[in-house]
Length: 169
Image (cartoon, rainbow, N blue to C red):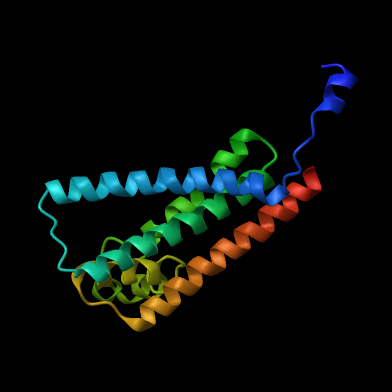
């Protein structure tokens, strides 16, 4: 384009946060589609949650909040990485954390050493809250911890991503 043509068009002023938010929205939607697929397979295999309608809405809300928080963190990790390969590898610890929690086996059924470790990873309160919602036994203690951790991850990811983006731009 020539300089005269460029001057005829007004350039839209976008905040740096909005570009990052677009990436987070895509990541969140992708994660929610994966959750729907997993729930569909679980339902086909006979999983029937004992949750009421309100508890199911709570579970959906928690999944959306967790997906949003994970999306914010992965965008920040991607921006902090020096190469595309290291950006992919940077999210591996985040992916592994649910495996080191009570996601597959409740923490109170584990041995002493493993139980202590499984009780404190970042995703344990979220998993326990989701399990409680789907089985019809939600706990307010798990709810507060789960919401606080999701909100904390989302804020941390947002602040980290915006500051990294500003430095690079």
